[in-house]
Image (cartoon, rainbow, N blue to C red; front, side, top):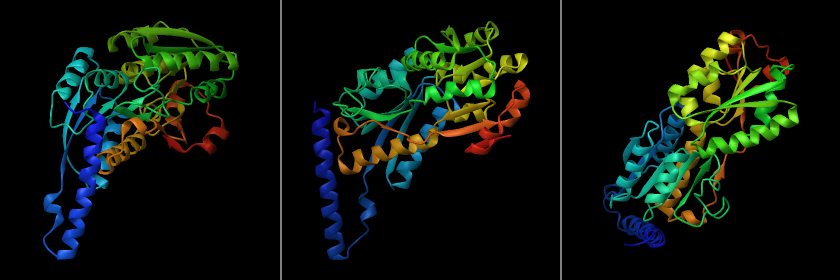
Length: 330
């Protein structure tokens, strides 16, 4: 079977041929070129449904629509079941018509990378592609896999704890022990917390149903929720406890603030999806090689605050934060 480099070469030849065909059509003044437009097949494997990952998927599709590509999508969602994640990847690997695969979130990206070697894979909402062994390096991926990272400004997020709760001494973190992306963020959070004079209290969970109990058993001054897919999918359980106990919740991304978290300096996942879609367009229409496409990231995280959540959590948002917020949810 032909490898990804051969397929990339064939795409480049196809792109050149398409340009030549358009030129000939223009010279002859003949029929519409749109009738010969290529239809691409893209498989989307998403780990679980929650607003951030859904927004990334929607942004990806939007980018390809904006580019005028005719795309047939095979969209699959594992709903956080690892067996289903593996099954989706295996099915995509056996589809000879697949032109590209989008993997949303780290578990789905790992499974896709392990199973699929013959077509380009783009990932999005992956915190640390190197730690997940998806790429040789972010600068030079080296294989058929590249994409966009949602690495958070974790230190800036932890610094928000003292700004909304100046007397805080402890910050609780709930995360899934099975998610590489979460482990990376927790280690970063510990370092940042030490700088802020905060003690981290960890609670690991295995399934979504564990989130509520983990939150209930925490005795902390604030809660930090990283971009952990299982916890974010059950974010309302964290909010329930936080509002009952009057504990501020610092989120790892903007959508969780819109759902009721207090504050974040975080990413726009829709924009991240669009950015990933633009990479797909370059692969499909220009013959770009994933091995040579650096992993991309957003450069300007947004400060998002929720004033209604502040009331429910008994927190006070400093005027300086309110004045500098990029988005205020009320």
